[in-house]
Length: 388
Image (cartoon, rainbow, N blue to C red; front, top):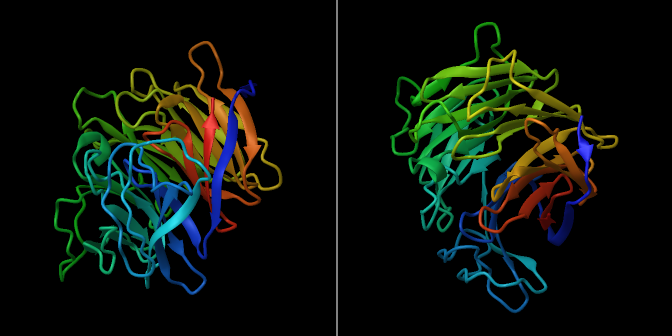
């Protein structure tokens, strides 16, 4: 259960229809440019880059200047400038590329936060991972077979550790840890080898990995202390300690897990949230960055009022306010919450409808507090702001 304090407000900045189903919309780090990826009705994969700009100004940057983009279909060359208030903001397409492979997942987080040109990692419907330079998308920088089937989810730790490491989760039920510095070219005799292969525990094979997230761990004090949270289609939630290479928390939330996320990507995490296809939100408490035993870890279950379609597609924390997180549902609503502490429960900050259909993706900008981008089943990119 949760208490309600309607103090959060959502305002839409701009929206734009696109011609394909975008499974993810991502902020290009250090900018207010957006990369969306997915597939169109023809069965082709699409990567688009948009700039959030005003009618009288170039695309705005939250931190630093990024190189121009120029790819295969539509190109607008412009540089990002210092942050100023947006007037008549709109999304302007900078580049688009179409490929024979359909994209399912993507991330920039394997690149170091200081990188002036972070590379995009994609997972596709044929089990491959691709590395892309968005200024030249004619061919990927590299591509290799990571899973037997769809790469449902991908997340990285380079923005935290400085090392280009990332994890992938597949329809084959396996989570793998990779390093971009390694040569993953497929050998004649077999597939590339990951750093770690996090197969499900015995007797739990065959469950589809729907979501993964990396976050800070309290098992030690070094930069290797990261955890990977995994959500499965059968309701399993599993957390792996990368350094120890073992599960530190396991539970089942009864329904398929759509999203998992730690409240902090670096430092010691205080909470883990998970959402399900049946409209339940689960919050698990950590103490000093660590889980207690599975039987004694505090779990709070919230039934989110989301109308006819109860699926909770995403859960994302505001990077500048890790105590605040937002959940999207199948009816096009954003629900806002504030984590509790030892004495208080999670607090609802209100709900706002921002779309007519489900929001598949939600990402907050890491430099501008509350600024988000999302994509919905109506093939629309939406940019807005959460005000607290």
